[in-house]
Length: 152
Image (cartoon, rainbow, N blue to C red; front, side, top):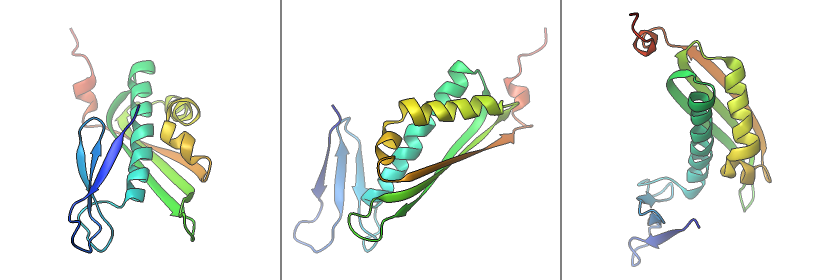
């Protein structure tokens, strides 16, 4: 079971700042644009999608395809409906994989598996949003030497 709670931090004031606590005991501030002390809840949904697919893709690239990844980033941009509830209507995901001789077919398959099988956040979002995924591969000429076993 997944659990979370939020609690208003200053109940006697007009601000809408909350402290969120995850079931695993992690804390974060949530706020609105006026307070500016933490992310808006909808921003956390975008972060959750980026994190969910990132965990899947990096695991598949490293463990299944043995890719030499030296850096990895996932960017998410989302458009929202104009009226409440302002659900995501279009989501663009960009995976940027940096490494040594990264195989594009491995990246494509890792992303496909995340989208079609593993990422629970993306599976939920597909019900309201059109999802578009792209990727970039950046060759890392500097760190490849460190990943290559020394010649005997």
